[in-house]
Length: 214
Image 1 (cartoon, rainbow, N blue to C red):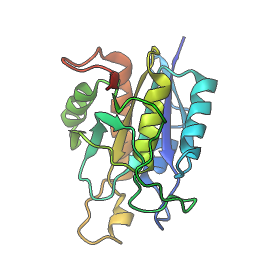
Image 2 (cartoon, one colour):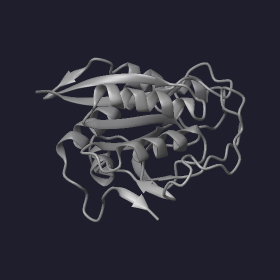
Image 3 (tube, rainbow, N blue to C red):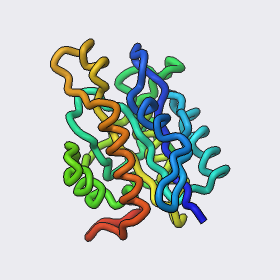
Image 4 (cartoon, rainbow, N blue to C red):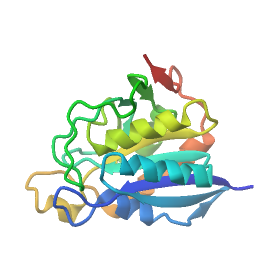
């Protein structure tokens, strides 16, 4: 029986016309590999609504692996996030023109959750594949972190690997942001494929694990 991988990417935001996360994720819609099939969902870049769409997808699909993907303009590599924190603190308004300041993602929830992806194994495989990659210690406090925290809160205690990966601008976006690094879409897609296959196959990293942080 094939395992199910759920990939999510956001709609464009902050006056951008594309979002590399969604462009990469939708390129993998319906892809079947060795014992798995990829399902994809687009998330609104809106506090609250993004988590609602994600929760509905997880409830419907019951995936084995969930990787949420987001744009991080200015980053130079595929950033595999370690930790989601229970705070919404928006540097800019979301797509509903909401700008939450110092609000919890989940009232009464733990301060933070660790990813349950084998993050170091993923980074090692990406680098072995010739792609720049690193473990990131912050997913920010915008809608990306909101989704990451919502994901980890929903899947806590479940037999499901879950986490978040930030990706750079696409080259056409970087052209409008002088000096900003970028990554070709094909390379991002290849990186996500590597990440999901490692997540399906690998055991937990040494000294890594999931769960809440008090």
